[in-house]
Length: 195
Image (cartoon, rainbow, N blue to C red):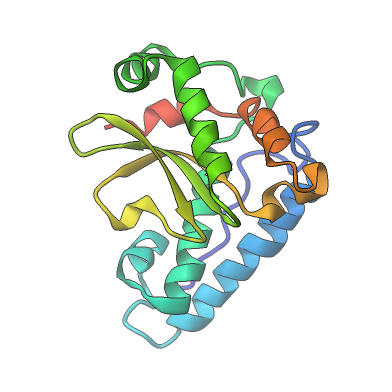
């Protein structure tokens, strides 16, 4: 059964003014769709033809891994966002806030360290809030399509650092994109992913 491009959890213009409908369409309707189409081409007639996207990511290598991981990462990215008018942004609720206090010394310190990780990397990639197997929180930045689901960490929050996530709106100013991105984080969803 082919992998399908998941619908956005909101209208493509719902993240405005922080992310434009054009950016969302380019990112979801073009880039993510192309990754899904490539995955389906590469799994046709193979033992992975009926696997879930996550299973494909965990078992694939080479081009199949790159496209599958990018599609999986991007799907999580959309779910981690919520229109500001519907409650996106702000700060995390008590459970996640307490975990951030323990791991980073509070939300403000977490945000500063997350931004440092997101700005440190060169080129395309991802910034993550992760939960370690022992329950502790951690921050990581990964290049290209590298994803935590191939390891032991559990991703809670994904921030796409590929230029197509922000170039139409912010050109090469990743700092401005991050400032806008924080206004859209769906902390309720992020907390729901905690184990």
